[in-house]
Image (cartoon, rainbow, N blue to C red; front, side, top):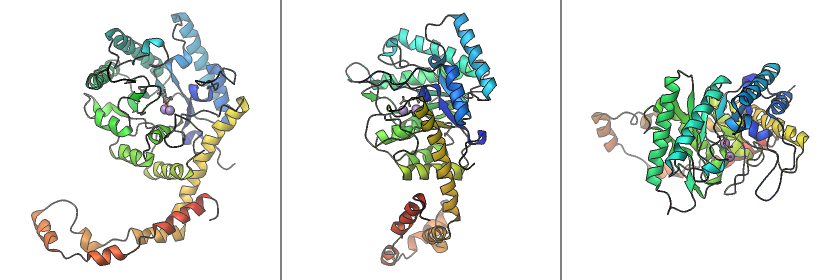
Length: 387
Ligand code: GCO
Ligand code: MN
Ligand code: MN
């Protein structure tokens, strides 16, 4: 069957995504709360490859040691039965009231220490389940007023926590990488390290920068009005695209977490095309949830839709490559001007001298139209199934 998800596509969902019962700040749950075991079976039914989790999506924060062991055992059995894997895990450092003013950036040393303790335990759990990527999303690491918290302290505390946890992973000899996920706001008024670009710069200041990359989320960059593809390209160029959260969202809105491709077809297309072109080999993780209008069947429609859309766009990307008219236009647009390109590249004094004397016909160069209108319309036709 066409557009059928296969394990090789590495489609994953969080327990919290398909498990989202539709609760929001204005209303109660509209769907039953599914157990982790039920969610694993649901994901297997729709054809997902893996399931990711926060510590407390699986083990309640107040569980005793024996409860924990029973829950983890049942969950592992469900994984075994279905063949699903757990490629990524993370810590819930935002749900419990103790984190009301952040975790690693809290002003209270007791909260910061508890956050480290909770994360070390959650890392142990993730590794026990087979995770090789560990995500950090600092949902509560921010402010509503800058009166209470010093942003300079916050960045230093965040660094201290990351350095501590990298050392912890090394001391345990875990095969685990960290992926930092940015979001500009919500649930805090402003969240520190607001975009993927901020995260990339921050990572370079860490003691073990090689262990740490990013987990960019499409909706989060769109909330900030940014071009997701550009940020993904920069992360890829830096060798830091360790994980990705795919979803969708109208620009400049609250965190909508819509089904992948539900809103911005074109951005989603160029993103899929990029991931496939460069050979991104990590999980395609859908961090989204079904509309609040849906029941459990609607949740399955949502999950199938995320994967189907990805595969349709992947197919469109292949068609783009095979389309003679599009390729001819691209060839024209990217035509080599060898006389000029020989003057570019690595500096040498001779080259600089030649370049300084080289005549450029500014008028002739600028008079040529670039045909992007034509190309973009061809892209539209392709996406709409006209070509
Ligand atoms: C959000 C975030 C989260 C994180 C998750 C894993 O906006 O709520 O995207 O879903 O991705 O907590 O870190
Ligand atoms: Mn989100
Ligand atoms: Mn996310």
